Image (cartoon, rainbow, N blue to C red):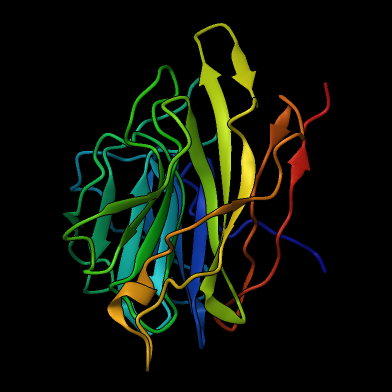
Length: 256
């Protein structure tokens, strides 16, 4: 397989790309300082969709499998570098990117990932890293069951540890995996990893599906699977989308 660049050439550095299940030509691109772009012809042409918004940094983007007109964007990149760009929460579009509204979590600053339930576009989980240069409380994993009208913090360690990734089990959306990352940036250095970092799993229900009671939709407990990896751990969950399914999980351990 030979890779080639297909743009958008003015989009800039990118952390967020997603497609539309069943449509091999439509993709969304979120630049860390270039906003959201869309192609409907496999990359031959790209259209900017986010120019009218007050923020241009995109850290995560997801299209609802059950309704491709519903798109969620997590603003603010979570790649902890010296020139990191901040955001102001989560944005939502219900018309395929024509219009956007901010649906909250404005003080998260940096969002590493968000996932939409495969059968219900109103159920969304957000992995928020939080402030890069200081402690804050609005970080961790958040969940909405009403399309962003309200948010609940369902996984939180402390004011120095945020969430960098969250995914559904591709075989069972009642099971979630999330990675927490303790990190602090300064203008001249970075402290990466620490006792707050770890991989967590919830198995007690995240979805409003047939036969479930409302209380079964709440991931009440998270089991820590990775405390003890050390201060240089960078936990990341990577979800590869193929026919609408999330496939792989990985941890990357940084070398000293």
